[in-house]
Every structure is written in C-alpha cells, then in structure tokens.
View 1: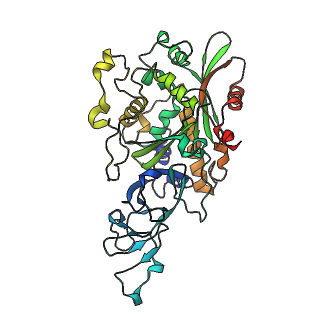
View 2: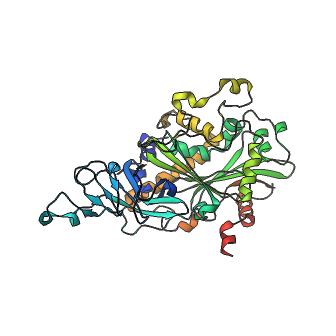
View 3: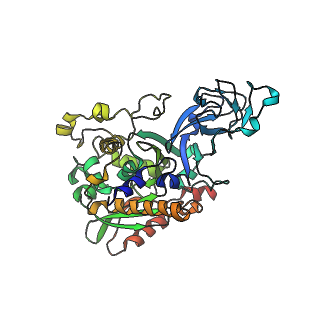
Length: 436
C-alpha cells in the first residue's frame, strides 16, 4: 500500500471508521436461521466490532441488539428468553425484538419509565435460511441485497459458515487472486494428470496467466487468460461485489455461487458460502475434486461454543499448524501438505497475521485485481464519508442479480467482455426457471 492511512481505512471496521461506515450501509448475513431457536438461549454475535446478542422470541421474530442491558450493562446473553422478549436476570427488565423496554418489575408503578428506555437494537430480516442485519442509521433500511444465490429457496441452497482468524480483507483477497490456484491447490498436479475434458489442465500447463481487470457496476471483475489449443483462449472470470462478496471460477457459468466475508471485528471474519445445489454446481465440484490431491469438498469443524469467537471454527488453526502433514507435502502428492481447499486458503490467509502489514507487500502483475479492488473500496468508502455518496448496490441491489463467474474456452478472436457476455446469455438461470 502507498500509505499507512490507506491500509488502516481498508481494514478497520468498528464504529466510526471509514470502512465500517460503508459496511453499515448494507444488510449483513449474520447467522443461519437454524442457529436461533424460538424461546431458546440467546446467541452471541460479533458484527463489525460490536458485541451483540441474537434471539428468537415466542412468536418467531428475531431480535439483534447490543448485549448490554441499558439499565446497568449486565449482559443480556445471560437473559431469559420468554413470552416474546428477553429478560435481564439482574433486575428483570425485559425487551422486545425491537429493543423496546416492555417491563420494569423492580420499579414501583408510579416511578416506571419503561417507555423512555430502549436497548440498542438493529433491523433484522430473514430470507431463505439466513438472518440478515442492517446496522446503518437509516430510518428505513435499504432493500435486501440482490445476490443471486441468496434469492434461491432454502431447499435449493447449500449454506456454509466458517470462521477465519484474520482480517476480512486478506481473507476476501484470497478469492480474487487466481494465480494461486496453480500452486496452493494444484501445485502437485501436472498436465498429464488431468483428463482432457477438464479445463484445470490449462491452469497447470501455464501457471502465470495474463489478466484483464475492470471496475463494474457491482464492484470489480478480473479475466485471467491463457492460450489454449489453436485459435482458442482459456478464460477464468471472477468478481468482487460490494461490500464483501466474491464469486470464484469453479466451473461453468451455470454454477450459482457467492461468498461473503463478513467482518466480525478487525481480526476475525465469518465466511458465508451460498451455492445452488442444482446439478451443474454438483457436476463442476465433482469434476475438480477428482483431479486435485487433498482437495476434499467438506470442512472439518470443532464443536461450537458460546464464547464470542465460538461459532464455526475449523479444526486446523495456527496453534496446530493448520494440521499440516510434512510427509504428504514432501512425498504424498499434496503440494501444501494440508488437506482441503478451504483449509489451504485458511492457513495462508491466517499465516499473514491478524492484520496484514501491507508495507511488507511487493505486489506484481498477478495482483492487479487486488490493487483495483482496494482502490474501488477506498473510493466508495471515502466518498460516503466525505459527501454522503451512497455506495454501489445499496439502493439498486438489482446490479448484483445476474453476475456470474466461471471458466471456459472461447475463440481467441473474441474480446474479453464479449466472451463474458456470451457466457452470461447462455447460462442456466434457476430464478428465471422458477418464475416460469
């Protein structure tokens, strides 16, 4: 990074920060609906550096609020979830899902002032298996995001959460850095190991692609390209979508997938993956897993706990060297010695430290998407701070709906944006099919 201030503005997300202010303009995917039980125990929730609780009341409504009771600041995590509200066990004050105080039982009736007390609560919405939270200051929240995968019915979605012990930006940037695939995930694979009908063979034949990058209405896009057989180009397209969504090339454009890198605080991130369970997605995933040693599709979790960082932690971490197997790394055909694509990505991004020191970086041509995305983020966040300019997609969520990523072969004479548009026109659209 050119300046330390640029780095700080990118990675800090707490109240009052430049990036935190921008993030709060959007709805955040905060939890799976299944994590929050009706009249069940409150859930500790960290979002943008704020310590919150989530609970589902007797009527099924979800509330998300500051964990501190506005009376004496005892934690409402200890509270009783009962009869359409959360009751603080310290003095019995009770709050509904909107944060309104509805009972003040330790106060004589003539001194009751519950109508003047309100817990800090945020707007909540549920859609297709996800609980969304809006932490901005608008009286009326903007529309929910138009991320295509999030619009699919819950029955057609695979939803995966996983925590990273690092800053949100370095976690996200792993998804928009395409050349690492030929090393981190496929470093032990040669062209002869790949079936002729699997496009990964071009990635391991040429591990140094050329790039096009561009700003888009939804964020940024890259197109990595390599020469293929005579007259053909192999393309890998991927996208960054405001404020923290990515789409990675995991097969044909028929695959519907999006990933959110939701900042819990400055040094912890919740990865939220949404994937259409339709046949094209499954077929693409299986075709790649058969040819990449150590590339299992599932993740290994430790049991959840109730502490602030207790949700969706992977078994590998810095304390156990991310379960690296040096024997497999040296002789077992697994380039990293770490099993699982997500585990490999996790190890790399967490190994950079809780927050990457950007002064140590020496970025090159393969990092053009990263530098472009950082600039796009900074411009949007600073324009909001300075002039109140609404960031992309907040009020026009439809810009996200038809965005796709993927890899394919195309005639070498076709320009890169034309090649993308052609794939877009021919891709399967499950939302359109459902509407017919």
